[in-house]
Image (cartoon, rainbow, N blue to C red; front, side, top):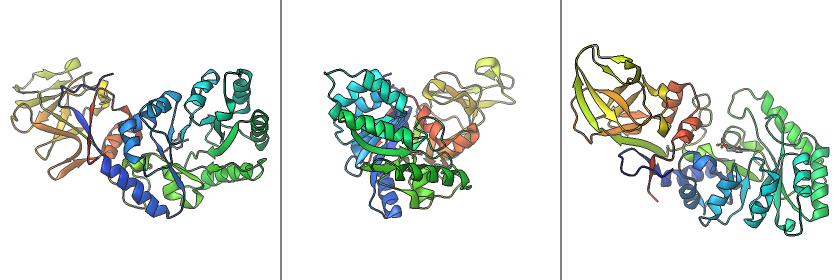
Length: 372
Ligand SMILES: *Cc1c(COP(=O)(O)O)cnc(C)c1O
């Protein structure tokens, strides 16, 4: 979808904050580890290309979730290693080889399918892969050292580059350590019994890097914290400073006074209890501003203004304290006067996690990049 540029709704992305979030993370872990920036899902809604270009000199590689995201980076000049974290379809492996994109091997069964699909036009020696170990996350990955070694053995016979092995923790953002320790032990045991150690052994995402920094190995896969968000929401305190990166702003497109008893929006859910000033803001659920945002608020003139009526696809309505002019600035995420709305505030209102709030911001919202 093309971003809607003729509309005042925009996400403002502070690129300098992303850089300082990486630098602060490096200072905090104080260890020589490669940082691979996770820019999947359009850089958690921040724009994968601009984020990747902005951090390119600060990191050694990138992680994405699927092949198309890798293709997008390669076609915009990113030449550093890119690891696709999920399994891709075996028939697409040749595309990854041509683009020198590193693949995740999620199982021996998958790897055998890839090998069965081989023909002489495919230059397998250019394939790099990391074996994924399912140490307890339960999505993808090998579950025994025998399975891992069978993959390595097959790769060796075909001259395929076994470049890494990794796992992913399910509870690194929680206080209880038991599950984390179990996963770590299983992963460490598998790595210890491999036919050989690859160049990269890695297991930490932001949460593991922040709250279990002793467990960081050859690569830190840094996503969330780079975007200035606490992976645990409010559960655990950050251990160093992060700066929020994204603001969401718009402007009033319509202002009116309605009388007691008049209604606003689908279902006529909002019934004015008295004479009420209503403003209309051009954002709706098609922008990722979901329908459960009714009852939350935005900031106008440094004050909280309640979102009233149902959220439509493209617009929503708010209750104003004054008859502001058309074009009056609205803050949906960020600072306005002395008031501030954080991504976490919105996540708490919705009963979800901050990751989901930013990832849902759709392509229709124009992104504006500052402090490049
Ligand atoms: C998304 C993802 C990450 C990054 O996680 P953050 O919590 O955003 O740092 C790391 N590793 C894997 C396998 C992932 O899927």
